Amino acid sequence: MIYDTIKSSIPEGKSGNWAVEKFIVSEQEATAFNLRNKIQLFQGRPDRPIKSGEYTRLVHNDSVVMSDTPAEVYDLIDLEYNAKGRVLISGLGLGIAAEIVLQIPLVTEVIVVEIDNDVVKLVGLHLCAKYEKSLVIVNDDIFKWKPMKGVRYGAVWHDIWGSICSDNLPEMKKLKSKFCRRADWQGFWAYYDHLRIRRCWG
Image (cartoon, rainbow, N blue to C red):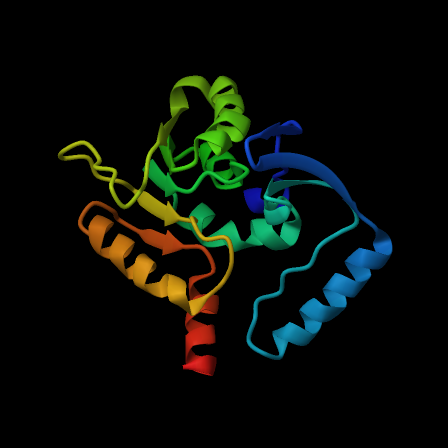
């Protein structure tokens, strides 16, 4: 499976309030994380271990938005299984989702819609140079962006949220409705975790 081996190819850099940084996960940190992960298995969470080593993270105002640790890359497994034909991704992040999909033979084109121009500068320009004609990045708001008339997607993936919160569910519902007739399959980052939080806290 591709998600098992993918690592970010984005170099370190800064643009506005965003930054791409390299960081190290020590053996001790990996052990502590994996212990917490095992405890969460009893709460119905999926197994999301990490390994020690060097990784890349996307930071906004000194807060980590995402990284390419195995635990986070694992969240894209549903996308990998369902990606085919023309794939639409809302939210660029580190570009991990796009890079996974672009390695799948059944995928012909990837379109990424990203609202923040600084993220496009840091991540998008690098990926467009790497993948050339197979990747298109649009600097726009996914809620306002209108795809070309008649275009259908083999898969649509939404990852525009910085944290897991039940407040994100209305936005997910809105996007699902917007693309339901244009996609063979549609998925959302951490969707079931969002639902679990709503059930636990009402």
